[in-house]
Each structure stands twice: as structure tokens, then as C-alpha cells.
Amino acid sequence: MSFLDKILGKKKTPFEELGPLPPLPEMGAPPPPSPGLPAPPAVEAWERAELRPEEPGWPPPPGAPPAFTPEAPPRPAPPPKPAIEDIEEVAGALVDEKWEAFTKKLGEVEDWRKDASAEITGVKEQVRKLEKRLGNMETAIFGKIEEYSKGIEGVSAEIKALQRVFQNIMPAFTQNVKDLRQIVEKGKKK
Picture 1 (cartoon, rainbow, N blue to C red):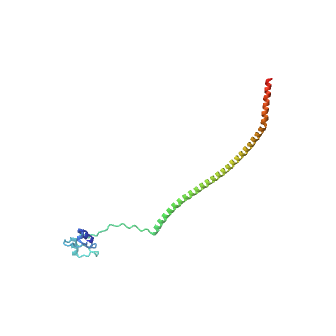
Picture 2: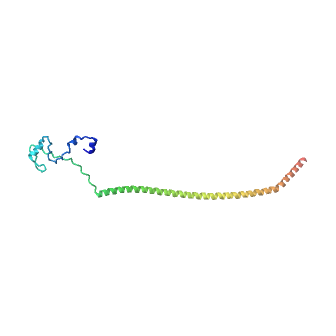
Picture 3: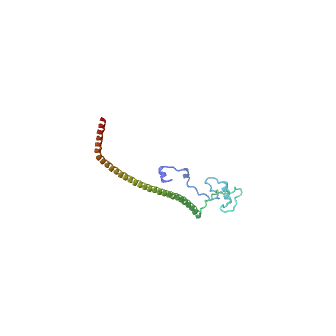
């Protein structure tokens, strides 16, 4: 009983009161007799025959039951330890498998990169063409605006010329119209 158990007031269990167990007998030898109990008949027969069970080949005493030799159940054989070559082969197969999967994925990524690069190049070319067309269109629009501007300037000059002509012709024309009216009125009166 430990010091802590004494302080806590724990009592001994029945097994603790008996004390330590005696050592187990060797296989084949009869168990030692318990104090105060009669010995079993097998123990008495062994003692009378004074056989030494550790020596092989001695038959059991007459009238004694055959000796019990316990047979342990067969233990399964431990799995064989793999050889280094087997481990290397398995490791190599795993590495090959993983490497193949990696290269396949890498190939897919490379294909995707090539496709994306081709598409980007196509888009860039379309943008260049569009810029060129817009540049040409801008040049054409500016050319037309300049042409219209020159045309308007020409029309403006012609209108000014007509205005001058009318300024010069109008007084004479007005006078001719008055003169005609007077002639017509004289012709009506007659």
C-alpha cells in the first residue's frame, strides 16, 4: 500500500492482502501444493515416481493420465519483409504514375497557353486592322470636310458675286419695270 493510500484511508483489496504471487512453475512440472490443502493425485504420482519432467523420453507413471503438453495455437507468420528491390520498384511505379499525370496536366496547360497566345495574336491583328481602317476613315472624313469647306467657300463667293450683280442690275431693272408699267397704262387708256 502506498503512502498516499494510507493518508487517504484506502483499504487493501483481497488480492493485496494475499501478497505477491509465487513464480509460475516451468512447463511440464506439477504445480506446487498449496499450504493446508491436500495435493492432487497427479502431484502425488509425480512425487512417487520421482520423474524429472525436464528430461525427455521418460514415460508418465503407470495409471497417470497422459501428460498434457499445451500447444499454442499456430501464430500467423509475420508478413514477409519486402525486399529493397520491391520497395524501389513500387516507389518507381508511383513516381512514374505521378510524373505521367503531371506531364499530362503540363501538356494541357501548354496547349491552353498556345491557344490563348494564338487568340491574343488574332485579337491584336484585328485591333491593328481596325486602327488602320479608322485612320483611313478619319483621313477620308477630313478630306470630305475640306472639300465641303472649299465648296462652301466657292458658293459663298458666287453668292457674293450674284449680290454685286443684283446690286448693279436692280436699280436699272426697277426702272425698266416702272417704265413698262407706264407704257402699259398708256396703252390701256388709248
